[in-house]
Length: 164
Ligand SMILES: Nc1nc2c(ncn2[C@@H]2O[C@H](COP(=O)(O)OP(=O)(O)O)[C@@H](O)[C@H]2O)c(=O)[nH]1
Ligand SMILES: [Mg+2]
Image (cartoon, rainbow, N blue to C red; front, top):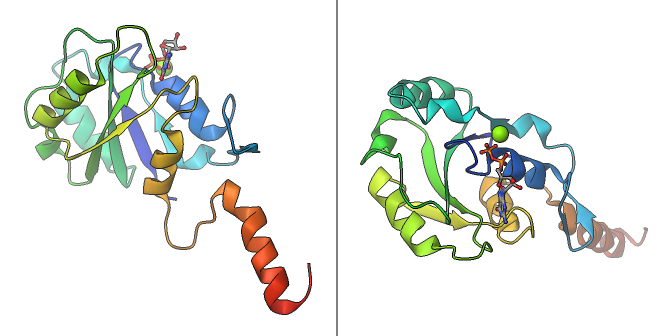
């Protein structure tokens, strides 16, 4: 798995998404996400709410392969300056959270993330688990086996070698 660092203002949903990716609350196809603690870095929202955002982004992104900028679909404004992603020499993805909330405007949040410089945008509701699998799929590397593929792959190997 590629290592992702999640950034966004307080209440953006960083910790909840971290939990969803770690499988503490979410199940997908009855399989729990487990043992990905080392590939997700949660950060305090304070970085976003100060002028130090750019520097924090640049520094912390060295710890990761991918930076995820979170913005809630319920936010009435965005704190991201235009093209903030130019501070980072890593892939930066936009993640719109809380898509299932009442009055959510995922389209507006996505547009703001686009202005911030994110080219690829994901949409999640970490409470229901909607969209979390897509982030997993993006973070996977060739050698990774996603949780819901384990059973299928085991069966395939069993058929090939005549064993289970
Ligand atoms: N419906 C919904 N609620 C969310 C989602 N993400 C976070 N929340 C809620 O929003 C609040 C703040 O989330 P939290 O993860 O603590 O935000 P953080 O400050 O960025 O870590 C909590 O009450 C969460 O339950 C989401 O994707 N969907
Ligand atoms: Mg948090």
